[in-house]
Amino acid sequence: MKMKKLLALALSAIMAVSMLTACGGGGKAGSLDLGEVNSVINEYGGETRVKNSNTLNSALRNVADILQKNGTYTNEAGTAALKEIRGYPIQESGSNWVREVSGGTIVISDAELKAEGMTAEDAVGIMITAVEYGLKEQLAGFQNINVSITFYAGATTITAENGTLYWVIGYEFDTRVSA
Image (cartoon, rainbow, N blue to C red; front, side):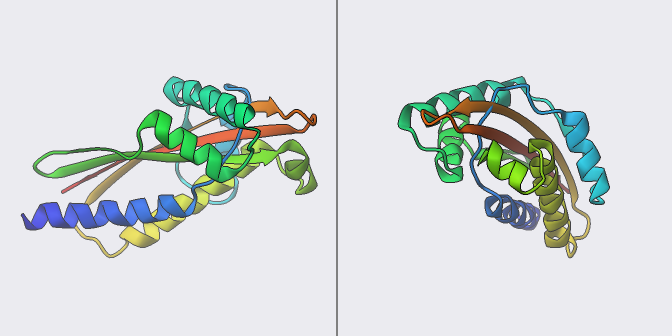
C-alpha cells in the first residue's frame, strides 16, 4: 500500500508540471520537423528525444477543424479540444507501477513566432525542455522510483478567415512510474 501511495505522489508531481504547460496550437499534421525539435532540446541542455505519433497527428487535425469552425484560436480552446478528443488523462496502474498519458497544445500565429525570431520547432523544443527540467526537479527527492517518459509532438496549420496563419502544435507525455 505504501508503494502505491509513493507512486501516486510521484505521478501527481509529473501531472502538476505538465498542467503548467497546457496551451493551444494549430497547423498541418506532419509539418513539424522532429529532428529540428530534438536539436532545439539538445541546444537547451535537454536529454529527451521527441517522437512522432500518428494518433496525436490525427487528433491535431481534428483540433484544427474545431478551432477553425469556432473561429477561436487560443491555447485554452486547443487544449480543451485535444483533451476531449484524446480523453486525457489516460491512466493505468499495476501492483508496482502507474502510467499516465497527458498532453496539450500551443496555438500561435505564424506572425507571432516570426516576431520572436522562432519557429514552431523552437517553441515545442523549448517547452518540452522546460517540462523535462521541471519533472527532474519535482522527482529529485524520490528514491527507488523509476520514471520513464516518452514525449510526442506534432503540428498542423490553419488559416483564419482574416488570412492569419496559425500553428496548432500538440505535445503528449506518456509517463510510467515504477518501483
